Image (cartoon, rainbow, N blue to C red; front, side):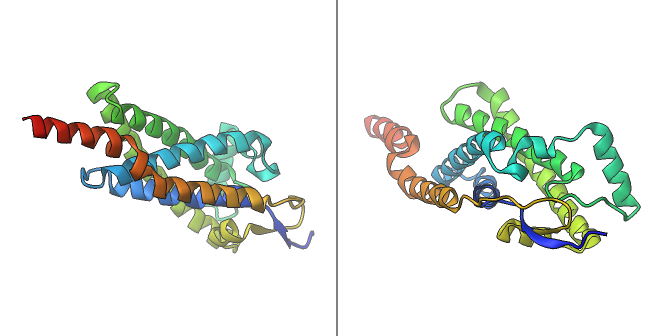
Length: 223
């Protein structure tokens, strides 16, 4: 029996993407119904879209466990893993497990379509149907997030490994697989700086501040 050891699994960009996505989605969702916080909602949506675009690229050129190929499972593998969960004997996966991978794929797809539809709606394209799609997908993402959190907690208990902590530190326990060789901390730093710079720079140069509100003010003045 192989003795488990701590190995580096999640690189810094993957971890940065994860937590920035959590933050941007939370802010965007909580400000969705507030006209007063429209700039905050839109800025969060743009950040979310940018993060997803990065993750799409990183899924092909990133480190081993961040690549899409490492968590591309067939329906049979997903069903078998869920059955093993119900029997409280789940197989250990150093990267994303089959059930978790379903949540990841859904979040990526729902998030991308929701963000793109949000941008189109913001620019008055697509009409009510697209606005409704944007709202439905946002709530669908919230539902997937809830299931994902439950799955992470359940897996943490069954595997006796804190999966939340592993997404913070990057380390997991494994006795068979190899650790990634580079963490790409510099790239994670660039991601954080870019997001922060966009967040603080957006209201001053965004469409709502420079275009939409100005147009509204002119119309009110002329009226």
